[in-house]
Image (cartoon, rainbow, N blue to C red; front, side, top):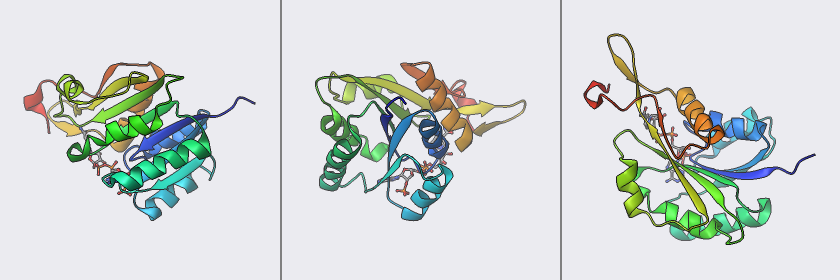
Length: 184
Ligand SMILES: NC(=O)c1ccc[n+]([C@@H]2O[C@H](COP(=O)([O-])OP(=O)(O)OC[C@H]3O[C@@H](n4cnc5c(N)ncnc54)[C@H](OP(=O)(O)O)[C@@H]3O)[C@@H](O)[C@H]2O)c1
């Protein structure tokens, strides 16, 4: 049997829960960062209790985050893929994550999930990532329907991230972000 790849999903118990389950079903061992143990337990139940490592940590706390990242590297091996949904007041967390996870011997993919109003090109100018990290952005948009518009459902968000991963997209928009004046 093929060896499992190792993915880390930051915020994997919320709107990315379906993505976490998809990764488990697609030969990944998934480390999941979140704080709430009951949401984590729910997710683990949904995966059939296989191949998920809960990483209960507040990603705003530098020391604890670094410690947990070192720990998952030791337990589950090198990282192949990171999917990160990080609130916009804590985006510098990515620098800590990439520094702790990068091993110069190999490249790995980071899919950064962004809210509708974040411009990926502006963001790229401000974040400092290691050269072994292949950076992808996924912008969450909205859905235009006949006479109105609505925000994406959690299911649509996870499916959009899966599409970006499967197609190795550099920049992917889930739904639409134009015309911006028609957002919900
Ligand atoms: N354009 C769009 O359509 C769009 C864009 C963005 C969001 N949304 C919607 O907005 C809803 C709410 O967004 P949300 O951010 O609450 O998403 P969420 O994915 O439901 O929750 C955030 C995730 O990050 C974790 N998290 C949050 N702060 C953390 C911290 N300091 N340390 C560690 N983990 C942390 C949460 O777990 P813990 O709480 O256990 O820590 C959870 O797993 C979403 O359900 C989505 O439908 C829509």
